[in-house]
Length: 561
Image (cartoon, rainbow, N blue to C red; front, side, top):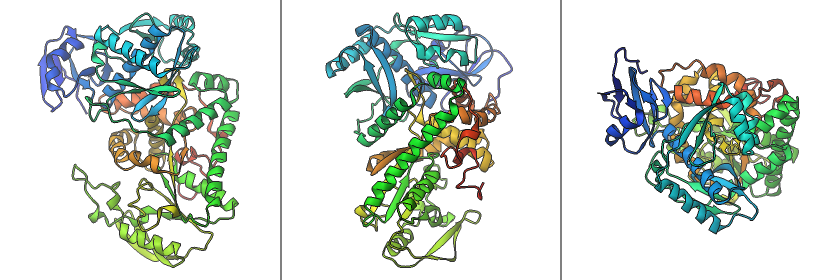
């Protein structure tokens, strides 16, 4: 925890932990220009006494300042947000009547659509990118204007941003910050860089029917990652967009209108029915190949709802005359003193070699050949495997269902031929937007799920969960996301209504995080996000919903929670 200084002067905490004292009475931008050489990439914002501030802030009082560059997640968010504003302005400059919609993430970028009289072409995208670079070359200020909510409403109505108008009533403050590069004022619910000249790394890629705004990530802020085709991921996003059309909304404001009219329970029923229909379709695909498929692998990142999905899939397979057996990878962990170590010399429980692969594959092969296997149980208290006479033998109509982060990795089940396996990738791929320009990050949806689950069932505070999240994300990048296109099918576990339910749990947990904790910035961001949602009572959520895995009273976990 950072202690607030008790005396004058501006104390700057440098990346290596050293503190340097500088003169106040200047903007953070001026101070950042003086100290920029200490940082690995351009500075885009600052923490002042651990509160996020823009660089245009004039600072005189005693404070501890930590500058944020592009290697920090919050810095990367600010950079992406400013690039989005740049894109919107460039499109407006070339096609004044066009509507830009930021849809979802794709291949380390943002997939966007531009609605105009003629369909977007590759030549249009090249012109837009050229205009963006022109705005960068001019190094224009990104202007900020603080207005009353009534004035913001008038601005949005004039610009036909009805989706933003709907959200004003939920705004926590009595003012709103509007940003502009040219003559178009906007808000993307967060801070921006001070000038367009800081936006030195980006590119546009035509991706029919839209485009992808591509940019560096915090691991390497100077390089745009190689483009990787993700046709299966794109298709599941398109499918979920069709679900939005069925529901009749794709932004939070439009959903709030339905909630206020008392239609929340109907929204829940439709969303859950769409989930159930998709799970039933997956079960039908597997059933049609029952002679070949013996192992069903369910993989996905943390808090994607793998366990509930696996149980619901099992139910649908039973409807089709199959009787799957659930095999837990957790029972095949190596003894704790044999667990591989990560780069910090700590046990890496997400490493694939944390699993006893030879034993696991030996048992898999025995089971699908109709032989008996003596299944171990892992004792998490002692960190060792035990055998309790749990001997099983599968019948012909009994495929194995195995869930875990390594399910897409062939090394996990190397003893089984690929055509005998069916791989499912599941994640909470949020497609509901705050408004047409502001997407809901998939990682935030999963983080909120984990915060609520950890607090209720694992005795872990929101502070500890947020602290652990970067490590969890690194494991996902290494073990899951690179392999997601290996799946036979993808399932989107996001529920558009879930933030409206989960806010009642998460808000009180997030408010307990002290201002001087490093997790405070994330807590404030998540609280601002949740404030946009009209609350929805939990009693309308069915007991078999994926959301119940995190909020409780799931019919699949009644004896475990």
